[in-house]
Length: 130
Image (cartoon, rainbow, N blue to C red; front, side, top):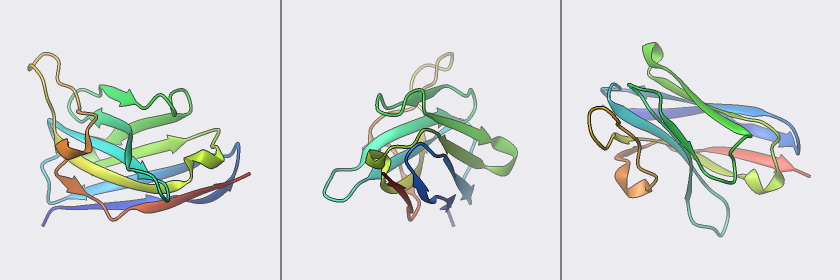
């Protein structure tokens, strides 16, 4: 059974840091993409970051560049999102997602669209107070 389970998150004051983790089970992790999306109340879900499991290439939304870092532990089928210098507008439910990688063999990359991710976690709340 394919499953993505998020952990971490919680509440923090603006300027603080949090780390969320996602562990994949029942899923072949190699040559895949793992991503983080978020959805704030009343807003559409948006992509935050993604990482290609077999090469480490990453992308970040402009709103989090320089503050968030996505990383992985392939041996544990786990991906992390380190969030620093958090802002109240980062408050959202954060979702882990997994899907195929794209592009030629010499330059695989991850899609930025949620429709291209096949499996999703239940989500974990991150709240940043001002």
